[in-house]
Length: 203
Image (cartoon, rainbow, N blue to C red; front, side, top):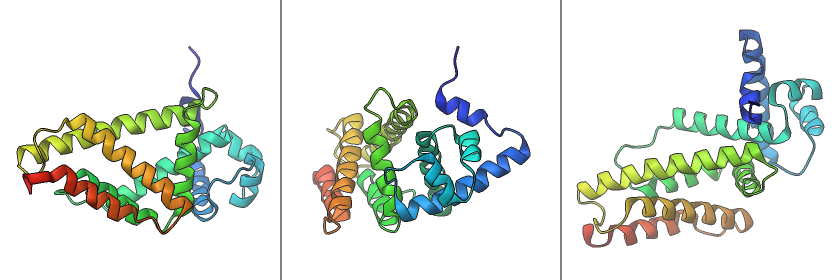
């Protein structure tokens, strides 16, 4: 069976020196994308900005889209590690915390939006795998969070946890896109209002 593009990318540079070199390139790429976003460009042009050869970028990441996925995943992992989320928060509050962090990295927010848009097209397997897995993980995590809040009386118990999860993600991603187009959109304020609507008489 043929490996998927993402599986093939993970297999590259598996030896210690290769792993270190790949991480070095990824560190620099994150800086570049945080500043410039994912403007339409070639892997060759990005290699020049990152400061490596086109051959090196192709060796470690395979394609432009695989590089974009790796950059976003790594930046998200770092954010989770350096600023752990408080344990006692609501789903919309979690998204508000993320929105606050994202204001300082509009380039990576744009990168995420492009990846999720590409994911609905058949010829973008790396973006499709990334977005599908990420949404499934988020829905599962948020649904579990909702059930915990319902059991403690902090959230209405007549709400379907899975639907709440899908709604919160849809609201946050949609507001994020609006914010990219118009920075005056109050992303966090809208999510706070959603929190109040979901809590209802529970608070």
